Amino acid sequence: MEKTHVSVEFAIFGESINIEKISKDLNITPTLSYHKGEPTSNPKVFYKEDCWEIDTGYKETFYVEEEIEKVMAIFRGKENELIKIKEENNADIKISVVINITNEEAPGICLNKKILKFLSDIDCEIEFDMYVF
Image (cartoon, rainbow, N blue to C red; front, side):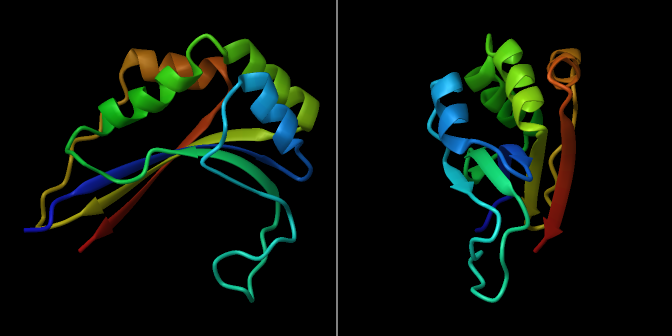
């Protein structure tokens, strides 16, 4: 039986970001990166901005909060570097949570104080995309 899955993406994006320098400054290799003008998976559509991204991949879970905290753990202690990267690259940071709901088994969504503080400290947006199958 198919189960509900959650994926969390942490993206730094902007018109012209230095992907290699971001990787070096954070000492993290992105799971995905691309430059403005490169083709997406649809060769007729092109990226409109540069992006450096960490993606957890889909995990079978009902605990969205835990998946967000796993991504936060990767960047723990690097908040100042993230702010500097944002300023140097005129970039934005966003966390995208993608929830694939199966068999009407929707997870609870909670953003605890620790998550909210992290988002605020790095001036980060968060979005939730939910798909029902």
